[in-house]
Length: 360
Image (cartoon, rainbow, N blue to C red; front, top):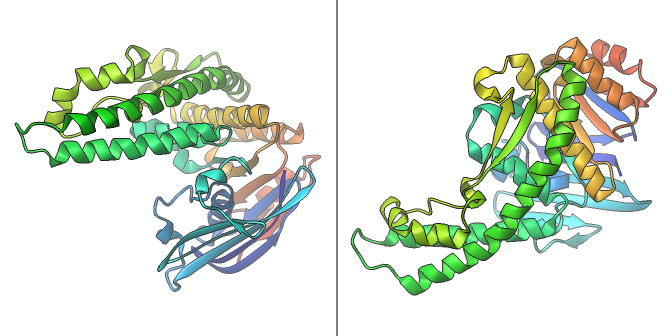
């Protein structure tokens, strides 16, 4: 799979930019704030219909304008695809593939798999469980559309159940018929979500451990542990047993929406005991494992986005990462860097084709 061209119009600080891309390493260089990361985010948006950095679509519109448009031309299995994503402040988001508009954005997820490694990935370690659940959801959705469908329906029922719980006055009689209907939907959808997450963590863990050993060259042991209320109880049991607690808290207190992944090094949480270098290696290894697993399942190499990677990793870790590029582990790679000279010096050592775009 290859992205051969990308066009940005009013996307963040890109009023109008067009890039002809190669099947190899594409490096975007320039000063901080010039828009390098925004190009990578535009690629992420085309692949997953959302920004990696902004939770609100409106924030991707250039502040002097009322809309943005992204256009990408992909080559996959020798077929050509034109993808357009557009949004204005007054209309809903539109995503079109070869001129045909998607009715559901979820139908697009997984067609063009992508993995990004970014400085903001540190949030996976230092922030709360919702960030790690988002990683699970983004990863699994790129190879299992049924997972995404179940997740959307679960979240819809969860929102409705929580709304019902919040609308009750304390001591009021609960609408048992409606709550049971929501409980049934949550129980049905949660089973698929739970089993998919559990399987994913089990499969990615061994790959992740392999990459950590390669990059770190250390004796540390790392591990991923899936934490879920459903490890010990069914969703129906959880909802029934915790109904009184839910009524008091006015929210659904148990279920997959509370899941987490424990990130462990030498049997201790890396958040508390890992050095900065160890945490960086942990995150890069996790993303590379995601890449390999997506390739294995989809039988296609995802696009790899490396944002500011040379500044954030030490020379040894950069060398190990680039050795994977040189061995053909990746197909198409996009890199941002502040130094054109550094980027050129590092990439010219590789046998892989590369090109450098200097942003002014």
